[in-house]
Length: 263
Ligand code: PEP
Image (cartoon, rainbow, N blue to C red; front, top):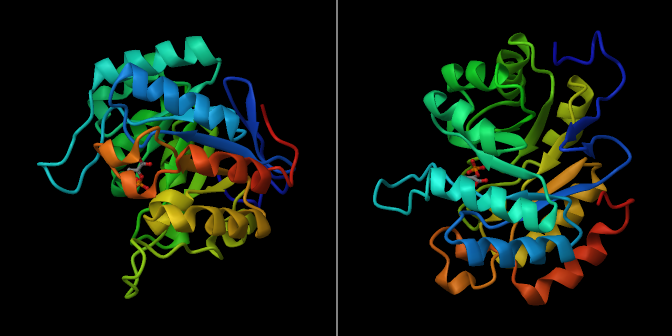
């Protein structure tokens, strides 16, 4: 279902009316985690100023350590819905539990399945039945074929509104948090008709790498980007080191303006 073999044209997926697909560069940006209404709103205005059409923000956070900030849960979803009402930006947020899919879908415009859950088959089937577009991140140890098989689980439930996201894989290199597998973008685009976007924030794990990796993603023909921004990254409860700050926003907007922006 997700293969290009029987579907030679590349698909355009719409999220709250915003297209993601060939010929556009759709930017999704916002805080890694929703921490408060004020922080999320400020981050959303930063995202908009950078040219983002969609707002990201985690209410349910899949943290490696159980002692790390786990997110605000449903309160975070309410905050996202409030910020959407104020800014007009449709919301992309992660779901980590099959039992929460209906709840998250009742607030979100797009459901994110994160790297750690790429092969959570019960979750994939649940989001496949939720009636919302899905952003499927690549697992950090998954091959492109495994990633596309995960997408197939979603598609099999009748939902073909899937966007793939390359977010870096685990290699021997430890200078960066993950290694952005830039070749996965054209490889996945050739094998599948689904749009492929890049996360330059979680792949590098460092603010200074976000713009260079964004340029690389655009150069290989990514259909979009998902980027962390934060009004006060030193106070961030999650991944502050990779969040863009106010001073970076104009440059991101310039870098991203090589293709027609989607607003
Ligand atoms: C995220 O986008 O908030 C996230 C946790 O990313 P990943 O699943 O790629 O680690």
